[in-house]
Length: 289
Image 1 (tube, helix red, strand yellow):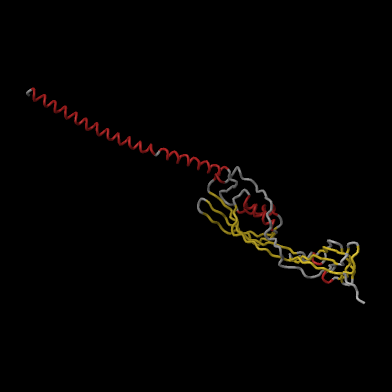
Image 2 (cartoon, helix red, strand yellow):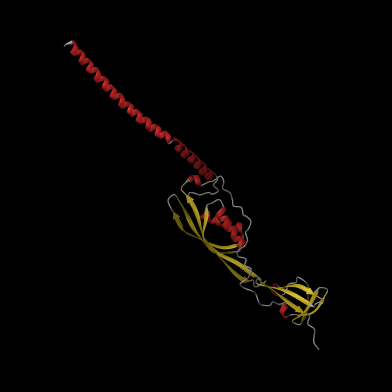
């Protein structure tokens, strides 16, 4: 081969290698540049990711705080005997009441559920019922009350003739359970403490029933006649008897002698008729000849 031709071939081959190498290097550089751009794009989102991480950490701490401060034990299953014992303990803590209890079925959603107890024919005073409800919902076990109905009834005591107000009630008690063993005990759970009693909303100003019968030994001020006022006492004629009354003495149905005016010859009674207050004045009656 001629020298010139050989040199041309060598130069052409070298040029081809250089061109191929340059092309390969350029393609590698483009790939690396794309990778760099991807990394830069991901790094640009890093502040947002850090904010999400901080938010998740904060949320975790909140959930952990709530979990650690749980005040309720949620057992793996609700044992009827234990719930009955819980209700009986609530009754003993609250005070005298009447109550009937029966099982009302089970509601389950797989991982948790509750047994329903029907509390019927309940009867008692407001303060006792309040303590009982507070005990059920604020004790160690997770119990919730549903469908509470309260009605007040009034009657007159046959012996004292005083108005007796009784509250009748019924409700459903849901005793919860869970499939998570971690919830069955809580370090923060404790027995319920009774708070100060609120104002009784079942203490009306006016009564529905009023005892009208006059008992033996009672003085009906409207039928009595004032005969004299001596040393702050009123002497009244009632049913053929002369009776001495002083300030504060109770007469018919809880009425009270509230005022004695010797100069005017007037005696005043305050009458409380089931919450309706009225005044009755009596003057000395002189016999006419």
